[in-house]
Image (cartoon, rainbow, N blue to C red; front, side):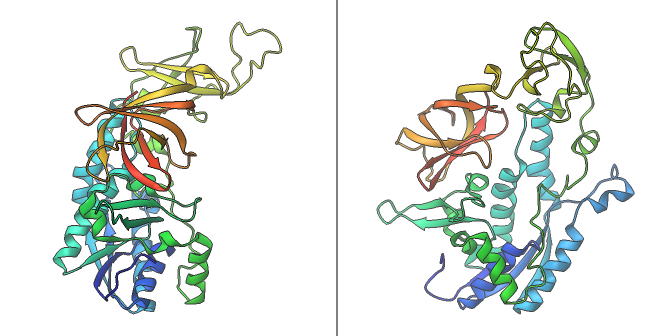
Amino acid sequence: MSATNKPQRVVVGLSGGVDSAVTAWLLKQQGHEVIGIFMKNWEEDDRASDEDSRYCSSNIDFVDAAAVADVIGIEIEHVNFAAEYKNRVFADFLHEYSAGRTPNPDILCNAEIKFKAFLDHAMRLGAEKIATGHYARVRLNADTGCHELLKGLDPTKDQSYFLHRLNQKQLANTLFPVGELLKTEVRRIALDIGLPNAKKKDSTGICFIGERPFREFLNRFIAKEPGPIKNDRGQTIGQHVGLSFYTLGQRQGIGIGGLKAKGAPRGSGDHAPWFVARKDMSSNTLWVVQGHGHPWLLSNELTAQDASWVAGKAPTTQALAAKTRYRQLDAPCHLTAHAADTFSLAFSEPQWAITPGQSAVLYDGEVCLGGGIITR
């Protein structure tokens, strides 16, 4: 278990979910003084409709978090980080989408809110450590004196990809108790100790989008600029609603499902599914191709910027592995670090739908080394 040798004051981010609830219980069982913090990171603005509150479960989550705190026997505080979230995370989210890229706000939220604003607040409360319900681990390397970010032991729940921008100070002050467990064990513990949210469904997505239609939400902040949809022969086969609303590799929601490719020979699989392959911002053109294995969807290399390394500097090992999206298997690659926080990766096998705006995250076995934002 990732714990310290003596009792400490540990502030736990209680989200209302089962993972953070079991985290708090485990730490209390270890003898720590545990305080719960519920973070509210989103508030609807004047553009929100009356029914939008049903998409964001913040109020329900706080009730669940408070119920958990009562069962475990710890204090809980409600903290509003909505202003910080909009300034540090949401503004970047909109900027990236407006530029035609596909950002991952969960990664920035971890770096800027959960392990910065939250960490600072916890330290003001006299905390010696913070803890969250992430499936990851922290290990102090005795040889280098650096804290390493490790994958969670449950390969189906590992969240190190989302935590790759954490630095040495943040890792030194953080505990990830459930990172040592399988999700099934976490559920079992929650049931055994009678937690009220033991069977609560895992959250998906981020609160400000929730389960609502993504385009409907984005429409409030980004103007639609319709333009042509073209295939790999340069033929116009439809019209898109705005490049910001599409991502590379997208299959659903393009608006041309089932359309037969013009000029395709009989029996050639001309009804194969369409995928978004390229976005040309200069001509406002969406390029689509048929078939999951189309060459336009495959690439052996990428370039990334805004690199963030867990150890504070780029790895010296060049033969590593990387993920270019969450839940992807580690892909063997060769790292070349450049100046100005940029790097390039050359993969042993072609990678599918490498997407600008997403993160390329590097691994050396179970150790997450850091990563950067894909530019091409």
